[in-house]
Each structure stands twice: as structure tokens, then as C-alpha cells.
Length: 524
Ligand SMILES: [Fe+2]
Image (cartoon, rainbow, N blue to C red; front, top):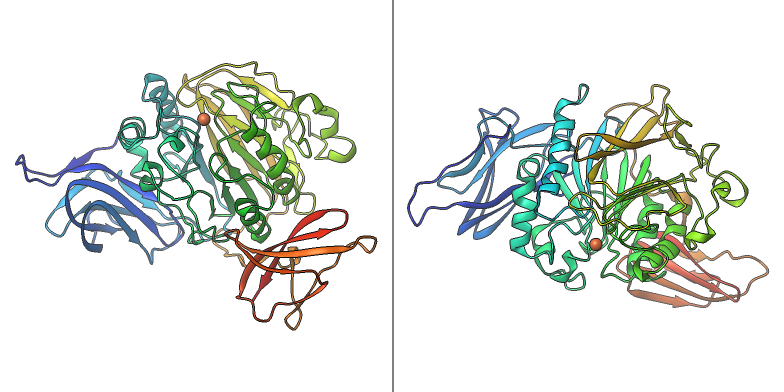
């Protein structure tokens, strides 16, 4: 039970906390604490590892009502209690110790991780609260890791119907207040958030409320925008895409950034979230709607080729969970369950099974055979909207309220299990599955080198970059894009002088007389 005390006297000039505190952009050494007050004041966060001795503090002297304080230099995997206020007074604290941040483990660490996944939650109704309460009950009564929620993953449409500031107050802050004070929230943009927010200008309530790492502050490659970004947590790499406003075209900025980003990561697990589902026959149809089709046709081949494990979407207000897929990029009538186990789309012996350890067995991946991903549309955290719910790529489709719980844990055999459960509003778990990855060296607190995955990049030798193409093809052009999609250089030659180029990561668009393909290059 959260007991938060707001300390203020009943005069008209008292400073009152109107929103928060809530946690953003957590890493193994830092976190951002945000809150709002009615009167502009300085911002102070007092913090420490003991509840009764919050002797460290971080102060921003600027007078503001929108407080944003970066705590840095923290220890990994460490619980810090905190309170907030200004230079004169503490405005909000938790005497029961339910206001805290547990910093992320060092990047690469293999340890138990739990994420709470909410899709299209922002209805501000009883259904939303029942889904929330079911999770709180689940996590509090868990026998092994009680109370542990390492992050909230929001799949967009967090506040109906237009993502206004007031709607965010009612459907987001008022509903999840208790969790937002102790768990870092991450999100992708939903179409309803997008009515009042704009990705190009990074403006509107969604972009004001959230602070995401656009400069790779939490790992990955800098995207230069909060519309899409990535972060590391333990040995997981998360890629957040904007399926609503940003161009979904191959070769455009988001695609080029995502390609560089996924090729750059050495993390054991790769999870992506975006709002519009690649496969759905719920309240939205992935055979009909452009954004859904484009995400599937443009992004899935690239993400699958680079080892994506789990794809989380919302938008359709239902729960639809796929088999272990690879290479199904067409319309639903082209799906053939046999192709998940045979032919060109081999994913594993259990590809079209249920993925349950106590059923047909977990889906299996190794570091060498990285094919196979599970796609989940879980947009029923605030309402259900039905639909045909008969997409053939789905193992199960349910018109039920609920949220998802992702848990990654040691498999006892030198690998890990990634398990996702669909937790209904009535506390029942109606679906679950596991992806097992072997050959993960389970050594807690060992920091892996999170440097570039060299083999996936072309590297220049003595400042000269050699473009290797199929000998039967003729090179037409090579275009260099930076990670925010600007065309930096163009060439028609197989050997390109890159000595004068700024260091960093670029995406090359290589066009021959037969095809166009993309490669990352790292200049260092
Ligand atoms: Fe939506």
C-alpha cells in the first residue's frame, strides 16, 4: 500500500504537487524524476539508499512548474528512496517507502527482469482500473519476486480520446500513480496521443510528459528524436518505433536508424514496441490499413533478419498472440502454418506449436539460429472492441480485457526463458508462452562489451571503404545517410574515400542494376 504524504499548508500561496513524481529514462547509473507544481519553484530531489536518511540531493535552481531532475552517478541494481520538493520544503514523500527507483543492472547482466505491458489503456474507466488491479495483485503476491516491476511498457493510446494534458491526468497519472512513483515508464506513440502531439516538431502533451533518450543516453544508437529511440535494460535491447507519424518507408530516417540500432546491439534479447500491429484481425485489420501493412512489409523483414525476439503492439483492443513466426510478410491469406516449420521460413521444431513449456514446448532460439519471433497485439488494457479475431498467424485471439507480463529468467541450463503472460482483469492468465535461448552465460553483474557488432558493419581500411556486391551486378550508387536520415554523401564507385567524413554510424543505401539494399558503416 502506497502512503504518500503531500506536505503543504492550506493557504492560497502553498506549493502543491499537481502531478507525479514519476520516473523516466532509467539506466544503470541514472534516472530522471519529473513532477508538476501549481507554483513555479526550484526543483529538489533528496535521495538515498536508506529511507530514513535521504542525505543526497540534486537541485535545479530554475523556477518552474514542470520539474525535471536528472539523478546521475547512481550505483547499478540499487534501490534509492527519494522525496521531492524545493529549497524550502519537501512537497511529496512516502513514509511507507513506496517512492523509489531501483536502478537498472549493468548492461549485459543476466538476471530476472519483469516488465508490465499496457496497450491502449487510457480509457479512465473501471475496465482500466480492473486490469491495473489484477497486475498489482499478481506482482504483490508473486512468491519469488514480489513487488518487482522493472518497467512499464506502454504501447500507445495512453489517454483517450486525444492525449490531452487533462486526459493524461485522468487516464494515466491518476490511474497508475502508485506504479509511476517506483517504476520507469517507457512508451511508443499511439494515434490518439498523436491527435495532440506531433513527432516532427516533438511537441504536444505526449512529448512534454515523457522524456525519452534521443541521444542514446540509455544505450543503442542515438535517434535524435523521442518519437523513436532505444534503450538497454539488463541483457535486453528495446527498440521503440513510431508507427503513427514518422515515415515507415524503407530507407527513410526511422528505418535507417532502426537498422543501425539493431545491428549495433550485442544484447541477448531484442524486443520492439510500436502501436500499429503487423498482424491483427481485431478492431483494426492488418490486411487493410496502411500503417499496419507498412510496418509489416517494411520493418519486419529487417527486424527479423537481425534477430528480433518479441514484437509488442496495441491499437486493436484485443489480445492476439502469434505462433513463432519468421518471413510471413504478406496478407493473412498467404499465411501457412507449415511454413513456420518447413521450407524457407524455418524457425524451430516448435514453430507452429503453442510455445508452452508444459505443452508443445518453448520456442527455441540460439545465438547462431536467431530466427523466430512472437508478435503480440495487446490493446485491451482499457477496453475491448472485438473484431473477427481470426488471423491465421495467431495461436490465440481473445476479446478480453487484460495486460501482459514479460518475465525473463534463468532456465537452469545456461540459458534464459522469456515468458509472456496475458493477465486478465479477473486475475486469470488466459495465455502464456516461452521463448528459450540457450548459450546465454548466466553471470550476474558481468558487464559485457556493448561495443559495435563489428561483423555486421562494413569497415573502411586506411580511410577507403570497399563496397562488395554480387559480381553479376553493376553498382549504380552508394548513398550515405546519418542516423537522423540526412543524406551526407553520394558515390558511384566501389571504393569510396571516407577520410574526411565525420566519425559515427551511417546507413548506406546501395543500389545495383538489380536491387537496393542497406548496410551500416561505422567510421571510428
Ligand atoms: Fe490506436
